[in-house]
Image (cartoon, rainbow over all chains, first blue to last red; front, side, top):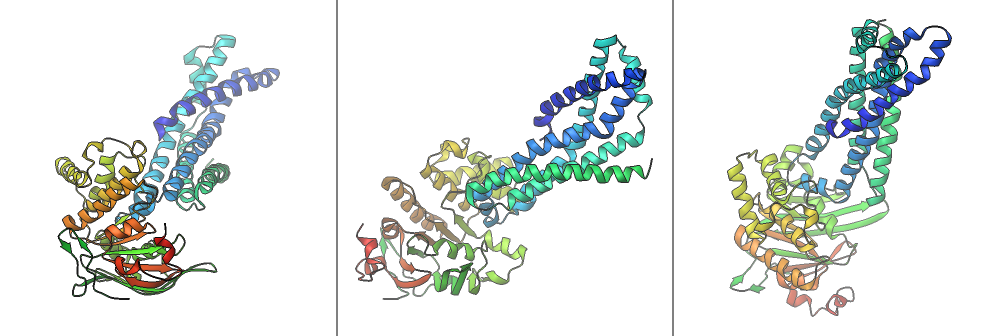
Length: 210
Length: 262
């Protein structure tokens, strides 16, 4: 699951890093605070942008994939076939997928953060020839362990929510092929909404430790 | 016309069910979906070694009946006994134990799309019997595929198979657990007459080789004629006539006589 999403997550994260840097730079320049750019970008990326982008991409890609796959298995009686053969389809189909999304999301977020920061660095470097070491010294100076830890925990919850919601709607879909489309749609919409809710709740929780 | 003695001959085989043990029993089964009552109190006995055909039009409740028998659907009323298990009062573990002894061939074949034929057949062995020895798995799959005449398909995906091949592989997947009872849901639906005949012959071969008792759900008269020891005609969720095929084909019943006109 993770390796198939890696390219898409990398591509969007890189662009997010580039765009965020280009949009923030003029504002900071007007206050004479251009040197704060690495700090701003790193905090934005690690605390929020990285997990959020990865979560939304995975909600779209994995959510629709899992929702549609399980729903079509239901429609074509494949899940019934597993049940009547005496196997437990829930553990085979649902547990494995939820565990996979829960474990892969934090790994993808770490990659997404690194690639977004790389995009940001290349943008800054192309404008004022800032060195790699200088840029990443500024990045690391303003990032705490709490930022990294909270980002990974948040991503874990994102992955769990995407897996669980997508499996639930797919596994319980009805009404034939129309149900497959509905399940895919529902998996994406509810997963994305849940990501924003988890993001907000985790922000409230993490602020207790800041 | 009701009887418990069938003497439908198939080759040298003659099945007389009168004195054989009852392996599955359904009593006064009722099932509704909302306001629509699909099963209105059907009762039947399946005897050891027997091929019992449930004949009826689409929507008469045939598939619902066998889905209730394996616990895929919960009936509203009635009793179901399969191989000594009271299906309605089984725990999840007991239900799985019972299901491993009952093969279910789906109308749609229900092969797992993402797996090859080999993996489809290995799946119940790995998940149920915890059998992971590759050599043993290959042997068992090969035997099951040989029994349905498709040993060359093991590396193919279901999408690469014809309708008749899918039916055969579906049957092979159930046979791999050596079931005592086989439930066939419309085994010849959507197949050409030649392939249908092959499937009917396969059903007879399965009984002979695996000593199975079978319930065959169909609206296909030629399937009933070739495979049935006894036929129960289902009309509007009720058992209307129980007879041998030869007795049934002379029926004057207005609900059943049209079956034999086409």
